[in-house]
Image (cartoon, rainbow, N blue to C red; front, top):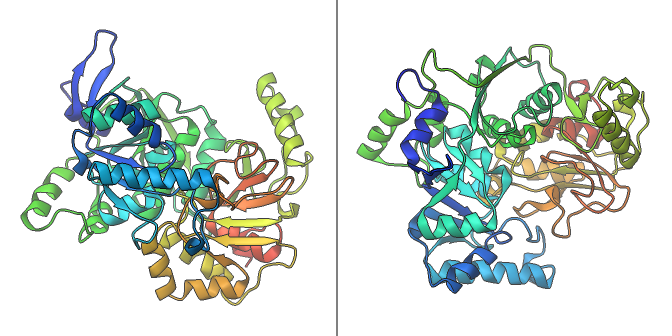
Length: 468
């Protein structure tokens, strides 16, 4: 391709090995992240075929999905989780794969651990058996989730056969009002344009709002791009990217750093490059968002009311909205700030970094959670985040407010371990998905920012964080 190129064009072309007869691309994989839930079957197939990983040094593993977040000295919470953990440990030992075990202070959610360790680098391709691998696109990397068969293929060949997605540019402009953060921007984007607006696209986020964001906020935005149907999310390299990466444990050092930076500075879209689709969103007057239904696009600001499905002209969407309200136990016209909560969850690969915990703690300091809240959890995204939060006194703030302080892991985000919702329990969650049963059978999940989660914990219901 000649002429101006998009960031995605540059990354794709530098990793495309060949194009098949049906138009698919054989793509080189730079880095591979493994968890305990989606990798065991891939290793079993690898052994059965008499193969081994092509480049073990490109792989990083840690358990995060189905692990306990407390009382780890007592062992795993069930037999399946124990088998998954043992399989991950054995596979990594057998094939000399880097592994952060549960007793390693670096352990945590892969999409938090890899960036903070400097494992996520600009200009690379990154895959993982988890859909929210898109998080790493905040570093100008093509990062996407894959299935078990693709995990095996990537391990054995360092490549994948994939279809090239179309390109989308999303320009986000405006200075965010106080209390409004990246999670609100993501929910606003999805609710405005739909949960399928980016299907089949690689989305590049640009604009002065994005440029002003920290790397933690950019990771939140790219993390949520999947909830708009995107194959991956991307943000160009700038000084914020370089400042974040410099000095990280696995970042290049010395002359290698200088050479890397020279290349990374080219990782942006050229002026005049064409996208298949362009969307624009002004967030100057944005308010804090809360989901009311069972999809991230079913969201409104906290000062609005639960929508009436009868106002939806599309019959399919109208039926989906009605079903969502029935599951969520809500009625049209109900003010969002009157929805009473049972549980609060601050965590997940979307919002469990130090910036997120600082944000929540700033609201909770000197306050107590409402007596009606049955349980409030804070689950740091990694051991490093946990250590830093404890050193800054954040753990004390959370505990004095009435929150439980846990060990790193995915936790209640997907309710795979013992951290889950009961039938009919309603939760304000900083996670990324809210479909039926996501956080526990019959559980009702409302997606929010860390600021909203903390404010709602104090009030016992949704409330504009700025009100506190």
